[in-house]
Length: 332
Image (cartoon, rainbow, N blue to C red):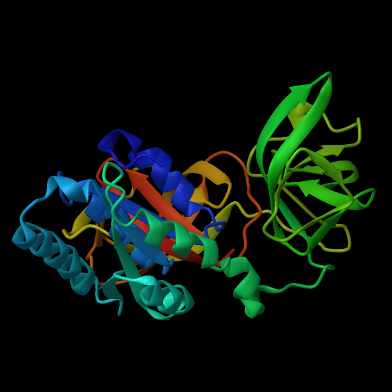
């Protein structure tokens, strides 16, 4: 994803999804650490994601003292966030093995790379080869096949057939089974049969948690009835769509944020992207919601247009104009 100011919304939306194993933060050594770099680093730290930092164009910095200054400044930003991350520069093959095994325990590997001279590339490639997928190593994330969820990210039509692309976030999706599709514009779910599954352009019978795939539903499901943000879930559940929800949020700005209760920012929650409004407490007399960067706040939101299917604990990001908020859903 892009790291410039122009790509803030797009990259913020990508980070809001619950599908990320690792964040690779690529920094051009000749330009140094920009404001965008600092913002994305703070956002990834807030989400408690494993981070790997790559300083490219390291050959353009000839003075060793300049390299030390750059690394020290990066370490100062990490220290200011108080997340317990230990940044260490990868120097040899022994470091690769150690850091790849400890990346989820607070180690933040730093690679110094030059694509021109090839410096550090062999270490980085070897590191990628042995880096484990977090979805494979996190035993607590294993969910029974009875609890299935498929998040719909894109819709497209091919030869008068509706193709849905997305990712399996819970359980195992099984060909020819019936699932609940929703919520629609009124917040309802309806039964739909799964006619085919394709992963990596191959027809398969099942798709497990963490796999990105495309699916084909029965012909009664039309393009007008499906949108990005809807889900497929097991048909023995009794799901409810939420028009309002509560969240615990905090500012990822270094300054105090004043947000008017009349503002309607766009919130990103996994595949969901919709405008929301802040619901003001009855006992609150303030005209603005004031967020201190070092405190958390419990806030109630309301979707402006359609109800959505939410999971408690899902990441929430508002990254628009001067509003930079991160949080998670506490009650749906």
